[in-house]
Picture 1 (cartoon, rainbow, N blue to C red):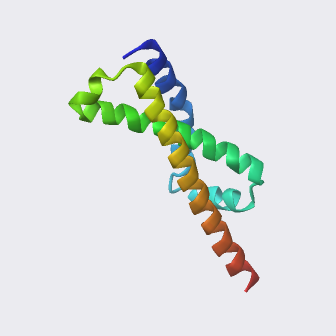
Picture 2 (picture 1 turned 45 degrees about the horizontal axis):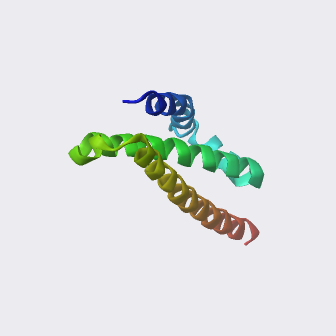
Picture 3 (picture 1 turned 45 degrees about the vertical axis):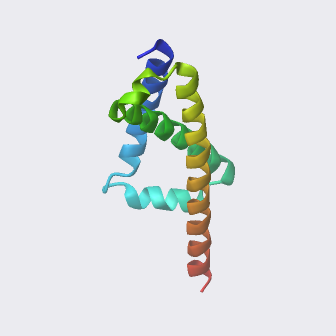
Length: 109
């Protein structure tokens, strides 16, 4: 594993730990309340960090499972990470938008 890949993976660890704690059964209700009322800018920052961390981990798992991926140069690796980042950010944003719409409708009726 190259130095840049190792650094990227190490930098995702604190975020993944924090996300794991936020999604634990003991604090999940508070997490949902925070997401409902969180300002859009802060929510966008969390989505971008979450999508980046998830993309980095997913591509590393992909490389471990697919033998041909082991020979990818770092340039291809990080291009796939970037594409995954965009896709995951869009998917997360869409589902949070849908969830907020549904919650706002349930609060008004």
